[in-house]
Amino acid sequence: MNVSHHSTTHNILSSGSMGPLSREERRRRRRATQKYRTAHATRERVRVEAFNVAFAELRKLLPTLPPDKKLSKIEILRLAICYIAYLNHVLEA
Image (cartoon, rainbow, N blue to C red):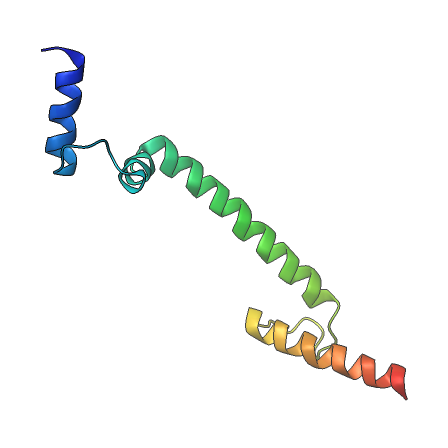
């Protein structure tokens, strides 16, 4: 069996069509590899950690009672919005 025949047979069996693999099919296969999944998981962990660090830094700037009160991310965002509005009001007064 020559290489081009094997390629065509492989494409027929794998994609159900005679033509070359679509961009989406190539992407789907690449994403299915262990190397890709491992790299993606690593990038996602780094992204989530950076996200959490940013929320922690924002949280340190917001006044609450008690000062160490644990807040959810949505609470941090809402409090930051209110605090910015308050500071803006103070500057305008």
